Image 1 (cartoon, rainbow, N blue to C red):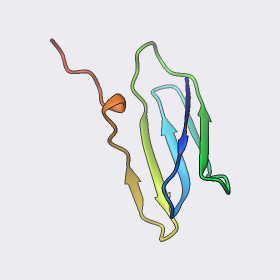
Image 2: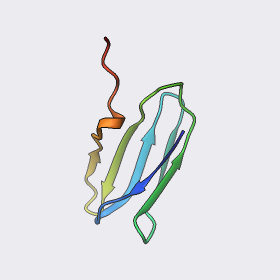
Image 3: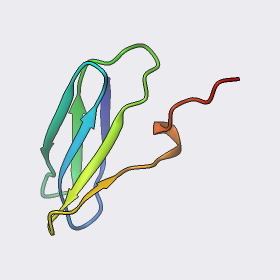
Length: 70
């Protein structure tokens, strides 16, 4: 699985976690983040960012939410 995006100002690190792996990293000078990790088929990753203040904030984007049972 690959995840790429542009981080908001003030974000210093990110973490992307699946049931198999975790990828953490810093944010580029241009705000670009890129993560690559193994995940199960159709698994939705858990994503969180760490602000310069040290506060960790989970990301709740609609494409990252677990699918609801039908």
